[in-house]
Structure formats: structure tokens, C-alpha cells
Image 1 (cartoon, helix red, strand yellow):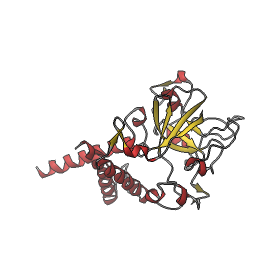
Image 2 (tube, one colour):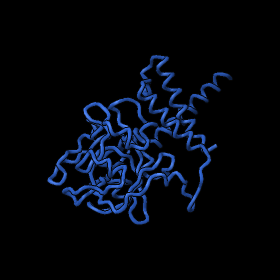
Image 3 (tube, one colour):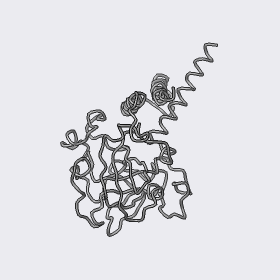
Image 4 (tube, helix red, strand yellow):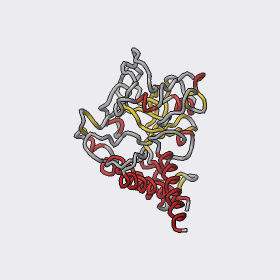
Amino acid sequence: MKALLPILGIVGLLVTAEWSAASGSSAKFGRSEEFIATAMRLRDDAISQAQPQVVVNGGVRSSFNRYPWKRNIVTTVFWIGERPTANNPTPNHKSSWDANWVRNFGGYDNPDPGERANFIPKRFVPRENPFYVALPYNDTTRGTTKPEASKVIPWFKQAFVRPGQSVLKGRWVAIRRGNRIAYAQWEDCGPFRTDHYQYVFGHERPRPNLNQGAGLDVSPAVRDYLGIGTKDVCDWKFVEARDVPYGPWSKHGENNTFVLQRRGSDLFAADRNNAYGAKK
């Protein structure tokens, strides 16, 4: 029964979207092609999560091992609202996929440890997942999808909606340092490059840059969870949403798979209770 909850949650989202469209209300979950497509992808993930999983190596599901670890990658820290510096010439008030990143996040993701608590800024609760990363590839450019994207991105066929809409944004990544693993969502492109798919999806190493060949940027939340410095060495890999365990990365954000599933479950339960009450 527990495995069915994500499915019920997505069904709840779809039911609510359809009801909002039919009633013409201004409810938060209005119907749009993009929302329906996103909900359907999440539904598919939930359905696959409900299928029997092969368990190996002390409880790790076999699909966790679908993608290989990128090992010993120089890792740097970046944050939403970061100003440009000599070694980071691109300001982070916007991302590769969000022109209003600071506003949509809810404010400046202050990296100062004294201004943070429980992996989020003290001054506000973020509206997007504070566990985020950047990798040096962007699948879109000038409003369209890059020609190589369909060939190099493993999940392109399942995730593609329309030209110009990224299939990378929000993808889950595992980051490992020592015996700790953090999970985060891919929300920006970098460091330095946006074209190195041979590294992101292939076997190449990151190319030389001003930060000693850094190939991964992580948010202050990831930094704090893993206990890394401004520049460190980590391993990382892609993971399916169904293989991400609960943790501090599952608590916040309108873009967060866990939050969407919880909200969908609540909506489905409310719709079910209302329908039951009406029958009585």
C-alpha cells in the first residue's frame, strides 16, 4: 500500500488540474499543457516505483546502479544570488533555465554558515529545493533544443515535451564525499561551460578551467550536509527520483518531487473525502 501513495498523489494533481480547468476557477493548480506533461512524467515515475525492486548490497535498489559514478571531481560551491568574481564571472541571479531564479527561490541563498540553519537560510523558507547543483551542459539554446541532446541524454525520449524545454532541469543527482551521500536537483549549468556533454553523460574528464578543472557546482545546503570546503573533491552520479531516499533534500520547494507527491496525496485524499461525504 505504501508504494501506491506516490501514484495516488499524482492522480490527485491531475484530478485537481482538470477540476480547475473545468470550473474556470483561479485555483493554484490551473490546467496547462506543461503542467499536465510534468504530472504525467511524475506519474510514470511513481508507477515504476510501485513495481517490485531487486534489492542488492544491503538494501540498495538495483536501479540505483544504472548510472556510473563520476569519481574524484573537483567540486566548488555556488549559490543563488551570487555576484560575479574573477573565478566565477557569471552572476547567479538567474540560471540557465530560470531568468528569475532569485525571486522564484524566495531570496538570496546566503552561504554564510551564521546565516543558515537546518540547511536553509535563516531569513526565509525557500520556495525551491535548497539542494541544487550545476553541471557543465545545457540541452537548450536560443529557444530550441540542441541537436545532439536526443542522442546523448539517456532519458531524453521519456522526458521530452517540446523543443526548447529542458529535460535536464530538476533531474536528481547523488553527490558523495567519504561515507556521506547528499541528493540534489540539477538547476543550473556550469562551472564555466555549458557544452561538455562528453563529460556529463560520457567518459571524459572535466576540462581545464580557472578552478582547477572543477566539474561540479553544489549549493550551500549540499556543502553543509557533506561537510566540504569552498573547493573539494567529490563523486557524483545521476539517480532516478524513485531511488532518492528521504532526507533534508525532500522537505522544501515547489520544484521538489517529494513536495509535489505529498501535495498530490493530500489533494487526492481531500477529493476522496469530499466525494465520500457527498455520497453520504
